[in-house]
Image (cartoon, rainbow, N blue to C red):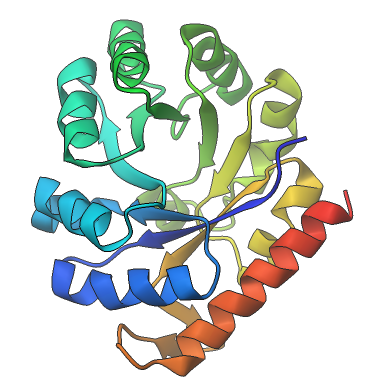
Length: 229
């Protein structure tokens, strides 16, 4: 059983906004930092380099959502300091295999996002066979808005049963649901930042003790949930 991991997704558009959240997350005990897609689009490789410089010991995920040029995109991020990249399950199998090859060449990891695949357990098995290190069960923003009530929980159990590699569930989960993920077989827990809890936004700030307190509580509860499995 994989030990629970708490990952904060920095879903901000600038390094200036993301860095205080990253630093607070590290102080609060978060295990992994993710350069979320908005940050990748806004700042690209510069964001990954800035995070690597600021937190040299922490794993950094680049949420590329790669659909083509699997080796090139992964290699660029690994050279910038990322330890993990994300490739899409609906990409061509050779794209997934090439991202995995880059991961092996650079001593890094690849996460396979199965969002929008019509057969998610089959996609997860295929990605495992191609060598990805983790599977992400992801229900996207537009998908959730268009089809109210959709959730990664719809597919989580069947995906967990289909693979032996660690699983992550992402997309529209409440804080309470995210904390419970280790008990559902998904030990890689993602918390998006900035956070909105009970209609209160926890904004980027160098001195936001509320954000620290919240993230610290999440870390403690996720680790406890993992021990209870």
